[in-house]
Amino acid sequence: MAIPTADLPPKSRKIGNLKMIWRIASNYPAQIAGAALALFVAAAATLGVPYSFKLIIDRGFLSGSGDVSRWFEYLLMLVVVMAIATALRFYFVSWLGERVVADLRIAVQANLLRLSPSYFEENRPSEIASRLTADTTVIEQVVGTTTSVALRNIVMSVGGIGVLLYLSPKLAGLMLFAIPAILVPIIFLGRKVRTVSRSSQDRVADVGAMVDEVLGAMKIVQAFGQESRESTRFIGAVEDVFGVAKRRIGLRAVMTAIVIFLMFASITAVIWQGALDVQAGNMTGGTIAAFVLYGGLVAGSFGALAEVYGDVLRGAGAAGRLGELLNEEPGIAAPANPIKMPEPPQGRVTFDHVTFRYPTRPEVSALDDFSLDIAPGETVAVVGPSGAGKTTLFQLIQRFYDPASGSVSIDGVALPATDPAWARARIAMVPQETIIFAASARDNLRYGRWDATDDALWAAAENANAAEFLKKLPEGLDTFMGEGGARLSGGQRQRLAIARAILRDAPILLLDEATSALDAESERLVQDAFDRLMHTRTTIVIAHRLATVRAADRIVVMDGGQIVEKGTHDQLARSGGLYERLARLQFQGLAA
Ligand code: ADP
Image (cartoon, rainbow, N blue to C red; front, side, top):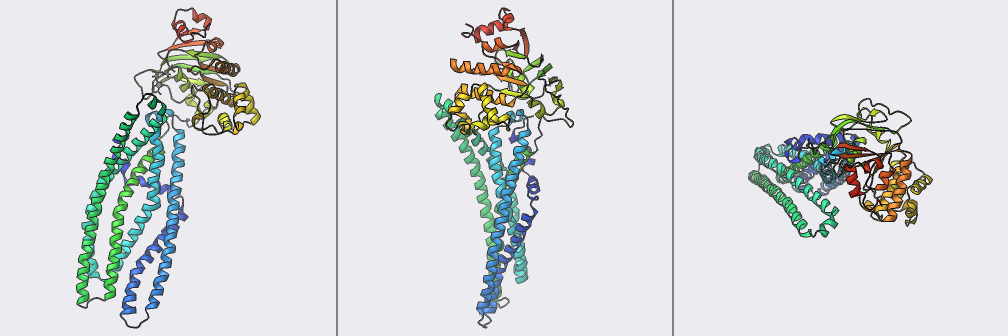
């Protein structure tokens, strides 16, 4: 189902995408009304200024009455109104821009949290992140600036043209004649800019993804001496961005030149005609002065509209992409009437003839007609070569994917029949690689149970053999763990994960033993913590250590998504099968 963004139909570039933005903005009618009112008052005041000049010239200077000051006082009052209204317009409109973006970010994140993991395999998380930052910034610009610039200039052009018609229908008619000649090239070039803008934003997302990847793998890059390759690759991506941007700004430059030329050439022609009229005595000096000023205002407004058009299209592109994130339906969700899980929880896990292929690798069966019933309280060790399907078992128990056929049940309830959140509440997971959040040690521990007291935290830490190192942290449980928990050793991270799982206190425990070797002391501490954890719960452990395998009630040997052997260590160790071979290779050294 993965559709590369480049192949998306042009629907995602349509102005119609901005409807979504309007829907969000329309939640704030008071601010919209305030913005609209301020906008009209400011535009009207601005339009009044040239007219004041006409009055100053015709009634003040030319009438010979000498009362010039009165007209200047009016002008000053107008300027005050203009200043206040403009400030209010800026405030309300910017407020709306920021608010819409905040709401949009929250809504997109909320939807992302519903999506199943397969979505994030098909769509790069870094690209999604860039949409949440870069695209929302474009939207903010559209709502907070562009819309107000557009509306202001529409009001100014319409009002300005109205006044021009009033001042001199003949000259204004002449001017209006020129407008179609100006609009046609704007629309034509606007289309081109739109296409180029879209690809420009895609290229920027590529650069973001690359930075992310390389910074995340800095040690590997440096260890393999690939700095110059990464640099070349990056230069390539950045130059791509520049190349596309160059086309975009080139087009816009041409567009601007054409618009300005047409605009001012027609104004010049009109004024020319007007000057002849004044000379002939058909028009006052004040009228021609006002006409020139209004002509300038109207021309400026049209120019601004031409620029705004490109921004609106950019906004439409951004809104289209955000709309995709906002409207993506989760592949895994609760049914309309989810079945309640039986109480109290038992901790039974059943695989019934399960066949499963990953959406991104449909040619390989990760599980192939797999059946296994794990009784409450039982400890099952899963062993097998890499790629056998061990991790996939965990993914399906947590319902990150649905099998193609067969069913997975917890406590007798088939997972698709219930709410995934209820089923997952019965599971605690200790992954191979512990995820440490950039938060305090306390928050990292109670990630699965926020109401845990400090006493409960310490008891869990004690059980997980984590209390000792946690106590030594500079600020105890309040110590900030930093990105990825860089301060902790591998063994410490694992014990933290175990403590986290103990606190979660779920009836089913999924344990993925780390393959990386720990030093003997850490190894013993981790193993000891595992033993205590497995004791009272249903445990499925992907085992890499002999001690773990020995402690299990049952060993399941997997290969190619199927069970190839079952039994205890003592039964299997002499079977002459895959287990014996694996045991010799994997558990070497520990067996002694
Ligand atoms: P194990 O944990 O035993 O090493 P896995 O369950 O990870 O094996 O993998 C089983 C099969 O599924 C392998 O062929 C593997 O390449 C494939 N696989 C695992 N995870 C994914 C994934 N996220 N996307 C596509 N294929 C996957």
